[in-house]
Length: 167
Length: 190
Image (cartoon, rainbow over all chains, first blue to last red; front, top):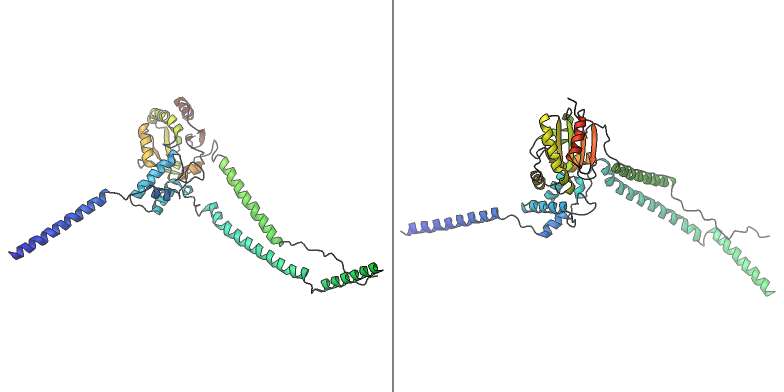
């Protein structure tokens, strides 16, 4: 009697757990990932309007942007990551929507020229600084023979003027 | 007479960058300006002129059929770029469909719609709204529109049966008659 009651109670606990699990999974399946406007804007700010230049999707007022934002919201609601959504838009609408130039063709220059220009500027700056450093001491050093000669001449000139004035 | 008179003024040598730095900088500047100029020039000129052959591209329609441009010779091809959000595209949509309905049975004409920067849901709703039955597909990655360097939608490119560009319409067609007259002028007589 005791044994059958124990079996019955453990069976009812298992049944309850199974029901709870089924309920939870059903609830998960029914409710998609909640997506806020901030979520949409976070991704939209990384994408550009296809018809208006240099306007990001989050602030773009056109009809097409509104549709794209809705499409974006739908993807996020399905659980897509930000990068998956961006990759989808690039595949659908081209690299220009991401604002990141593709690493092919002439666009490669955009990746190569700035670092090369920076290196050239640094090298140029270094050369100029080195040149100034080399020139300055020679021009101002009182210890240089030319400067010493000049000081001697100046003193002689001042003495001569003083003598003339005393007369 | 003053012995060994030094001068009071000192001739200052101008600080100059090495020649190779100047030459390299100028070359870089000229190259940069040339690239910008070429890019602007490319943008402002149409990609194709009348008589040019149809370029190589592939379009997969919303219903899953694939069209390769190199296999379209022998038919008059009407390539229409459109978008569901485009107001002026809606102005010509019914006219295009009407002419397609008339000319499709002859088998000498093919209309291809290319949905530009559109979502599939909106594009299909638009096609449904105007009863569009000619093949239309998304311009994936905007590859075809970049190839044609379209300036907007609608834009239509009409090819003759030899596969050469015969007419270009920037903006919407005024009427069915306009579309029909261009196509009829390209069809073989008889």
